[in-house]
Image (cartoon, rainbow, N blue to C red):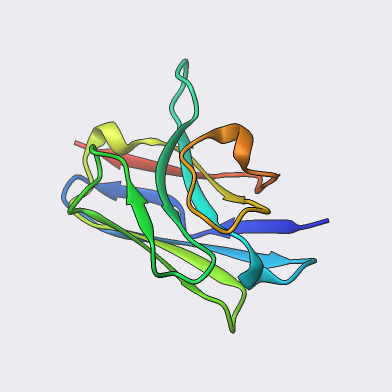
Length: 124
């Protein structure tokens, strides 16, 4: 079993920055890919960014390319999402997810473990 705990969400003005963290426990963290998803009210949960087990391969949704950066520190069992130039449309609950697969996936069903989510609100 894997436990994921997100932190770093909050309220920020448009153009501001936030850094989300996701601390993992319960398995060898470095063995699987990790992802960040988000879900706004009334909408589906969508991929924001993903990173392979080694950190050498990443994926970004078009809406966040150039603004968000995913990274991981396997020594600290933590994955990060640096969010810059935030927009009101980035407002959502952000979820960290862990996969038993090594390669990055954009599909929800390929992630096996989920955190409880952290709220990000961007005011205009």
